[in-house]
Length: 100
Length: 100
DNA sequence: TAGGTATATCGGGAAAAGTCGATATACCTT
DNA sequence: AAGGTATATCGACTTTTCCCGATATACCTA
Image 1 (spheres, rainbow over the protein chains, first blue to last red):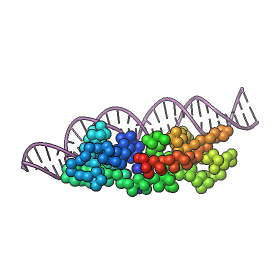
Image 2: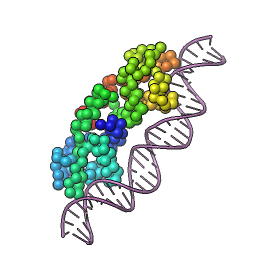
Image 3: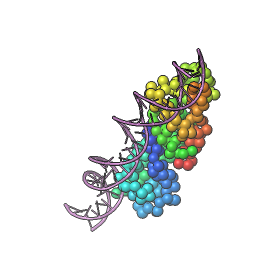
C-alpha cells in the first residue's frame, strides 16, 4: 500500500463522498438491473449521476481510487462496476494507528 | 476533525516524513538544549535541517499539520516546538475503520 | 534600545490536480 | 456490419499545491 498515493486519493471531496456512498450502495443508489450491489458494486453511470460531475471526471476519479487500492472494479458486459476493497481500509486504519 | 483537511495535510511526502520523525524524536533528532522532546516536541529549526527544505517551506508545512489537528505547537522563548497529537491519529484511524 | 536568532508570513513562478468537452474504445443488439 | 450505449482516454483550461527568496514579527541578550 502506497501511503502517499492513498492519501492523495482521499484528498478530494467528491472521491470521499463516493467511497462513503459505496459503503452502503442500497441506501444511496436505485436498484440496478444487471448486477447485484454486494457482488460487484455500482456501475459508473449511477455514481456519475449522483456525483453531478461529468462522465469523464467521475471515470477518472474512480480510476484514481482503484489505482490506490481503495476500490476494485469488475467489467460486466458494457458496464464497469466499482466496489470498496474493505481490506484496504482496514490496512490503512492499522497503518495510521501504528506506523505513521 | 475535518477529514478532507487531514487527508490533504497527509498528501505530501515531506509532511508524512515529519510526522514519522516526530513519532520517536530521540531517534531522529540530536538532543535539544532548551526543551525535552517528550514535553513539547521538536523545534522548527531541527525539523527544517532534517527535511532539507527552506525554513519558510517547513514552517508552512508545520502550520498545515497543526491546522489539521495532527500536530500541536508550544512556544518557548524564541523557539516553537511541534509534537504529535496522538489523539488525532487515534481518531483518524477510527474514522477510517468505521465511518469513511 | 540595538542587534542577533528563531519563526511566520508574503508574493511569485513552476508543477500538479480539478474539471470539462470531444473523441476513442469496448461491448451489445439487430 | 451498423448503430447504440457505457466507459475510458485525450487535450485544454482553471485552480490549487509546492517551494522558494524576501521580508516581517517575536523574543532574547547585551
